[in-house]
Amino acid sequence: MRIDMVTEPGNPQRLNEDYASAALPASGTGGALVVLDGVTPPEGNDGCRHGVPWFVARLGGALLELAGACGNMGLAECLAAAVARTADAHRETCDLFHPRTPQATVVVARWDEERVEHLVLSDSVLLVEAADGTVRPVLDRRLAELPPTVRALRDRVRRTGEASDRAAYVRAVEDLRNAPDGSGFYTAAADPGVAAHAVTGSEPRADVRALLALTDGATRWTETFHLGDWTGLFSLVRKEGPRALVNRVRTAESEHAPLRGKRHDDATALLAELE
Image (cartoon, one colour):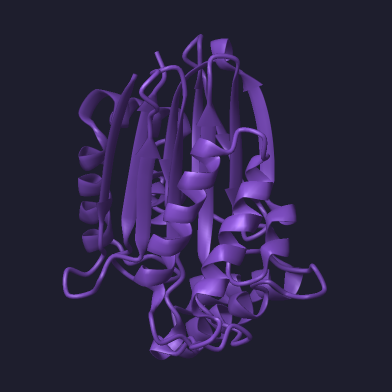
C-alpha cells in the first residue's frame, strides 16, 4: 500500500484552504483518506474569527478520526458527526448562521480487507481505478447542473467577458450554495444534515486497485483546461506523481484565465494505491 499526496496554495501569500490526510492502521489491512476544499468567503467575511484554514483542519481531523476508528458508522454518519463536532468548537465565538460561515467540499474514502467505501460532497472528485485498470469518477454533479437562468449568465460571460457579467454569474452560483429549498448544491458547513445529501457508495476491495482524491484546483487539468480525460489524469499521477499534475495546472492557469473563480486556486491530489 502506498500513499502519495501534494497540496499547494494558489497564492503563496495566503494560507492554503485545502486539507489532505490519510490514516493507515498498524495491521496494514485498511485505511482512510480525507480531502477537503475550503470555500473562500467573498471579501473575507464569513462571521468566523478563526477562518477557513482553521475550519478545514478541524473538520478534516475529526472526519479522518471517525472514518478510521468507527467502522460501525457509515461515512455519511462520520461526516455529520465531524460537522457537529467542528460547529461545537466555535459556536460560542462565531456566527454559525452567517450564510458564508466556513465550509468545505468533501471527499472521504475508507477501505478494509472486504470493502471500499466512498463519499463525495460538492465539486471535489474521487477517481476509482478498478482492478482491470479502468478509471471511474465519483462526482457530485449538482454544482455543474445549474438552473437555466444561471446557465444563461454563464453563457453570457463566455460571450462578453465583461467583469459585470462575471460578477453577476458568481453571485448567482453563490445563491445556490446550501439553498434551503434544495435547488442548489451543498457544502459541509455547520449543519450536520448536509451529510444526507452526499454521494456515497461501496464496492468489493478486490475490485479496486487505487483511489485518487482531488480538489477542484487539481481537477482543472480535466474540467477547465481539457488537457485530458479522467483516465489520462489518473495515468499522469500514477506515472509522475501528484506534484506533476499540480505543476501542469499551474502552467495552464498562467496561460489561460479560468471562467469562474481565482486564476490560481489551491490544488490538492492524494493517491492511495491499495495493492
